[in-house]
Length: 194
Image (cartoon, rainbow, N blue to C red; front, side, top):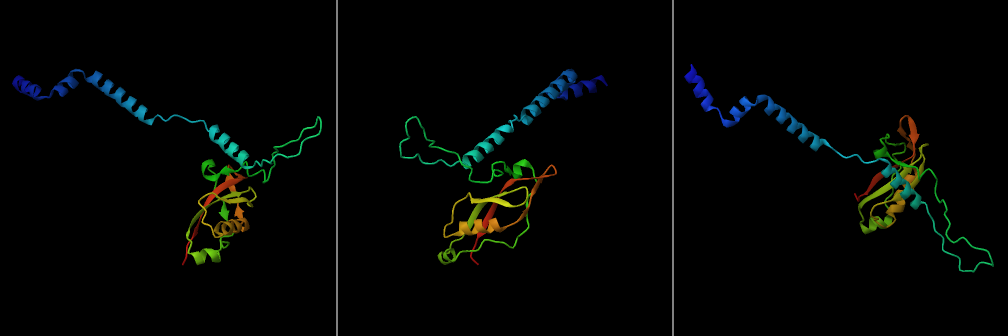
């Protein structure tokens, strides 16, 4: 019997002998290495979320600025003139509009799906086709506050046709945590000849 045990022991590989001899140390080391590997692969640094909010606020602020040209006349003695003034040209709710996808709000529902942009005669005659990317700002009441083309223009009045159509649309507002909010939505508008 001893001879059989000796043959079995001799036939074991060096790794098996090492594992048998240092069984506890081997499994502890293997466990630590696997845990470190998993931790290093799963670790994702956190980014402060307020950086995105600050960027959105800055872009919205810059978007609403209008700088006037300075007056050419000279001021009277001791008086000064204001040359650069800030004017709000749009609804203040636009600046606070959130991206519907990033905020996790529900999608606004188009209550007037039959209102579609009309193909202009000039674009049809020229054979212009393509897709516009329209940004629509929808208020917490469901009204459209702003519509603008943020993609490549197609020309021939197609941008204006799409913008006019979206201003005529009505929406149900986006809901976040049970409250309606003002959101920005990107809508692709495809112009295609039949």
